[in-house]
Length: 613
Image 1 (cartoon, rainbow, N blue to C red):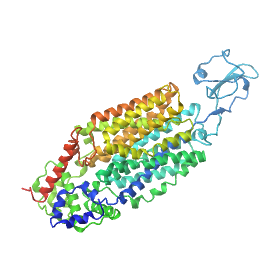
Image 2 (cartoon, rainbow, N blue to C red; image 1 turned 120 degrees about the horizontal axis):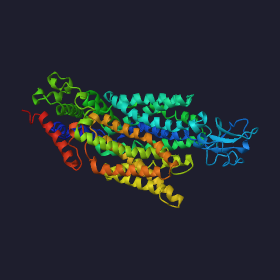
Image 3 (tube, helix red, strand yellow; image 1 turned 30 degrees about the horizontal axis):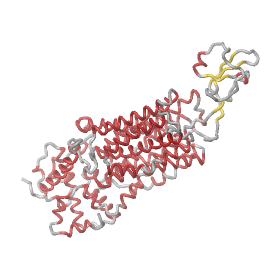
Image 4 (spheres, one colour; image 1 turned 30 degrees about the vertical axis):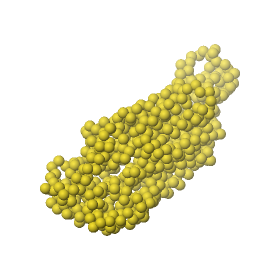
């Protein structure tokens, strides 16, 4: 739409106001004020810095917890160094005084057995001595300082490494659950709270002095990252329907830059604390959020805050180069008040059409929720659509279960691959950089695939391709290293595109009234499932084929489940209420969209006096 179209409508005919009012809804208002899209682009760019933070943070785990090779320096004084034999923990605990199977000339080398437990001869008595190493020297050719080298997290203490990774992912999930509780505050206030907490955690982490304090800070840091999904919801709700896919997918573009910048800075400094301190730079953008981030008009309308919603629309129009006429502003206000009333009428059983004593009040700009004539409408949103609907409404409950399964399959595979520091290359810097580089085109690819093929088919095809690529790259007997690397990168590409598509898909499948709660419930449980990823990667010590087999299987299961059970959202308006969502099912998408248009048209006729008894 060209700037100024909103003015043209009001001048088209003397009946233009009434005619346009009958056709206007939240989707059309967002389309009308889109103009050059500058407001939406800037808001997406600013809020998506949280996705940069997410990409940077998740990859910093690799460098923080990198475990280099090490040698034992704490040999007992009476031990003959030339007689040392390194043994496993089981042997250490069960060995008897039979030294006949050992080679007393074995040098102190970190080969097949790490230098954690050893045995050797006493120089004076020639008796066997078993010992546990307590001090180490670490190889610094890759990283000069990591959490592992700083706190000695090797041998018996190595259990801390998967704990530090898992608690971060687990509390990331808890953060999404907490975000559900913040839903009554609105998108903007929730976003500001989480980003402020994120700044606090990020600044404190490099100065932690113990592994216990670091564990606590990793929990807090995981909690704070829900901000990126709050921002995604806000951006999606402000975008017109035809561009929702574009904004929802491009939102994650900065994730890839955070990914790659982490690899570059880690290569430059080789120190986990310096890496974290460099990450403070992007936090400067967070300081602008109180002045640059607005509230979602959808949320404002459904909570009876029409004046604020109109103000946001006017601000969007101004930045987008669209000049609104006074008549158009009245139409927008009328539209918002009708959307609010329609929402309440759908969810309040006792409402009567006669409750609207003065339909003309829609023309005056009065807030219906505050009108003394609408006493039956004095019901809070929480008492209408609530989190309980996710479990009590049959369609919404089934959809939530399917979305949880699908998103878990995507998340487990995705996070499992990105914390595997040798998935594509044995060089940890090159591996992370390549994995980040391949994510750059994924936002555009997800935009194109979801717009062309739709959300459902895109998710299905991408997850099937992911599963096949992973299993071929890691489990198939392909002699060429280049081919295996190409398949690994391809699998990561398909999986990342699928992740972008499903994040948008989840937001579109929930109605506005419970969108934040539903999205965060799915995100929370899916991220919680990723806590098993470090342990799945650990299965490579049992068999190198187990991790790729697991990731391949869950990806394929997720794709098939999506195709069988979920409806297509491409070209469909966002559902506003749970009641609307209950009729939105697979195979009936077009009929549902037409039904939504008819409902609003009928309601417009009633409110304009065409069908009022």
